[in-house]
Length: 233
Image (cartoon, rainbow, N blue to C red; front, side, top):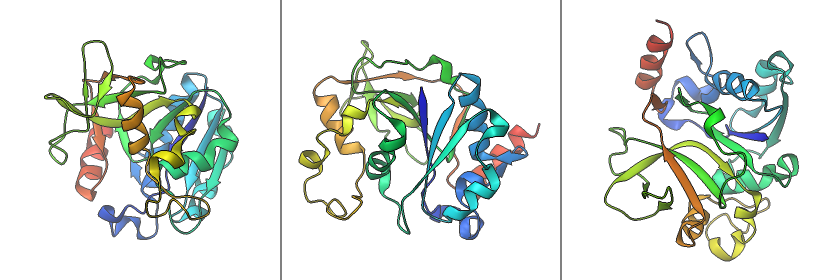
């Protein structure tokens, strides 16, 4: 299995820390945030990892190299000056990811979730890991039913953890779903993956699981400091 790490965002809520350092390269527990993911990916046998980059893109390769120190091959999907959002970024990275299901993880999260639990072949178009709603996102994203399928609506909504497995086919009809939304007609196109997930959920094609362990969206300097203290214990 190959993997995609989303690392193109500007990290605007993390300023001034991200004025000169991309958020996934900020240090926590003595290593860049993204290095925690690379170690875990290597541990489950992933060998090819695509990192999409835009903001301060030239900082990544000097820091991470070609991935050899982790036993990985790193491929950098350069998106240009402006990030292509999650959907556009995934579409742009498909030339490296190929036709098989691939693991996706957000570069600005940290979790003790074991990537080995993820299905190599998701039942439908995607399989997502969900966590309890954090204070900064109290209403959650999706609901998880007893059969393990995700829905847009529901009483007990959970938050997407930024970890999942996706089939490339999820993007097959992106143009029909996205339409003429801002950015969709630029080259390369820029759009979010969420509308495609909603469409797949309506067809019962997205499964998920609830992770009850540690997880944090490292979205502010305060949360980064908290994580660093925890990892340094």
